[in-house]
Amino acid sequence: MGQTSSKPSSSPFQNSQLFFKNPSNDQHTPPRPSIFSPLRPPVAKPSNFIPLFNDCISAASSRTQEYLLFKDPEDKFYPSPEVLTQVFLMTYISQSISLNITDSFNCTAMTPEQRILLGADWVWAVLQKPTKNPQIQIAVLVLHLHDKEEAEDDGMPPNASSESVQIAQKESSNKSMYERMVDFCSSIGKDCYALFLFLGKKSDKGNIYGVLSNNFEAAIGKCDQIDRAFIENFFKGSKYLYTPSGMMQAIVAKKEGDSLTLMIKFS
Amino acid sequence: MDLYGKMAATQDAKGKGEGGDQNFDYMFKLLIIGNSSVGKTSFLFRYADDAFTSAFVSTVGIDFKVKTVYKNDKRIKLQIWDTAGQERYRTITTAYYRGAMGFILMYDITNEESFGAVQDWSTQIKTYSWDNAQVVLAGNKCDMEEERVVSVDNGRLLAEQLGFEFFETSAKDNVNVKQTFERLVDLICDKMSESLDSDPAVTTGAPTAKLTDSAPPLQQPGCNC
Image (cartoon, rainbow over all chains, first blue to last red; front, side):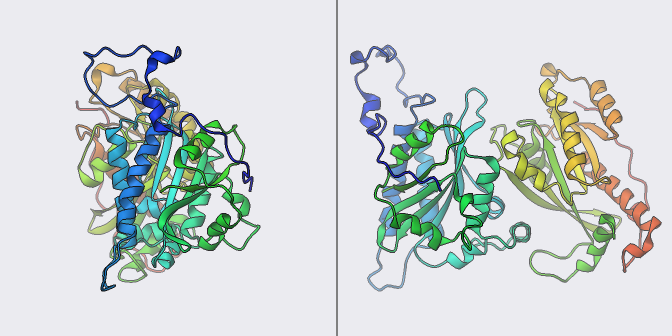
């Protein structure tokens, strides 16, 4: 699977504070803007979206955790898995807009039909300039701790009742959401990654983890099927968990055509 | 049984089957293809939802909408597939060409490159679809006359060379959007009737009325902007 085992070197992007350091000490940094410049969010450059991406993930993870850890004293009420996905995505999108990174790194939420056809909840993309065409993509499928797993396996979102959603299901029969997302990514190539995002694991219900790879298709044929158990198995052999910015740094630094598989802790 | 025979057999779908509204006489699968940013998604949104937004959101992979139209008292359900134009999605999008009865091949009249790619898209249709698929060539964004780089005549000429019908369209101003789809449906119905005439055995329940009983209205292919 091309799994990496070495701990990455410390990334200059891992501390978002570095992005805002005083430029007077750095000869390679553009001149400091005039104090008369209008106040606006920092404009993201092609390679410096990573600390801002990290900030967006931090906000989304923190907000989601508030609900992930919610416990009704009477044990009758709990947020639906779909709501947790929506909270994460809404917070991420809002934050990415306010930090102005969408010109270099965007997030496209899938329509209900696309979610079934492609197996992803949303797709992140590093954009080329000036075309804004995707250069690197990360397709994300959220996995929840409680229930709905059977529905996900069937490609049936919780509120799947519309006609078009049912047509999409017919088109996608015989394959699970996991397999569809892996197929989608492998059809694009090594610059498209599948990220399975766990909102809580059995061993740690209050945190958010992920398994990312551009090489899941290698598992097809070697194992019976790609399912939650198969993906969770990656954590058993991992000694190192990447940070979100570390993950992004590894993706950006990867040589074209190489395989990359990482485990990440998002919260 | 050829594809049109199978299509005709969808008449039996009324009230049967699992999932979705099965209450239709025919189901046509249509694809919109063409270079990135020519306006395929906007075109579909205008037709299906009568909506338009100028914000450009690149389509990821593929998506679709369903719309039901009526022709000679027959309900025709259109599955309209919106494809991403970027090369990186080509493997995914061409997988959906199979079984498509009609294509809207779109270029942008303000983008020479998108017009130059029409021939390649036509080859893609021939490669991945079937011989009887019907194609309409659409020169979109005809509201942007001041930025035009592809003339109407060149568009029409290329359509004739390729054997396609032709319209200039504007999703923004809602010009020839409905007409393009209606013409494509007419072409498919014509072809389907031909197929049924030549081999009535292809379907067990022959249509009670031909979909081409009344001639389609003449269309104005040029942009009225």
